[in-house]
Length: 118
Image (cartoon, rainbow, N blue to C red):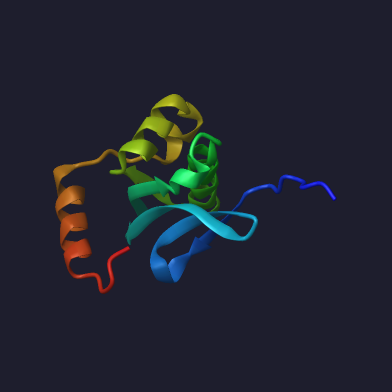
């Protein structure tokens, strides 16, 4: 019996305020967000070291951005990885809002008051 590679899947976990990428049913990474009106503020992305170097972070971010687009929302890339991804993919320029001091202050307050922070 040969192992066949599986296609990673991305799921939105609203209760946890994040998107998760799974490989063979195991969570391989996540990108965390908070919603601010129509803006989805992405603030953290991580990939488990066991899955590093497979391009999973890019797949995760692309799926998350496509989900935001489909819902008619906007993206604020506080997370450096999301910001770097967007700088290389101008096809998302139409849904990207700038990171402003007001957004950063709002996010800091939001995260301080969040139970069981992501």
